[in-house]
Image (cartoon, rainbow, N blue to C red; front, side):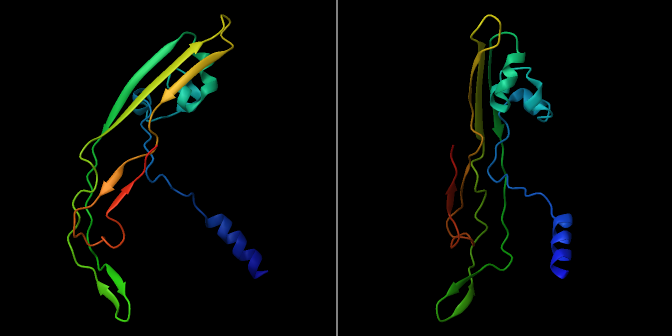
Length: 157
């Protein structure tokens, strides 16, 4: 009975996992302007090829959309007692600076979308979207307090 109560409580109290990490949502300038509300259902411009390819049949005519976003990232780290393990000594403070802003000052994020009907009745379409949904890299300054964990990380798509 206790196990069943625990499982029930766990299911009722669980929350969603927010695992966006290096997600770059800005695949469309028009979508950014709408805060991506209903982006997969609208089918109003060529960026629908990225979000919902079936909606390109709603466009009615060939479309090309080119855009981009500039992401300005500022990050700071603060040492709140970082330690590292040393054999036969135990945990010792790492020391070091804050590492500076590990992101590039400006990250460019291009997008290109194309949709074209292949038949006169508009039942068959071709589309292409080129964008970067995940990415960024971080590089900390030499001697930062987290140097035993990471100095440089990169995710590319």
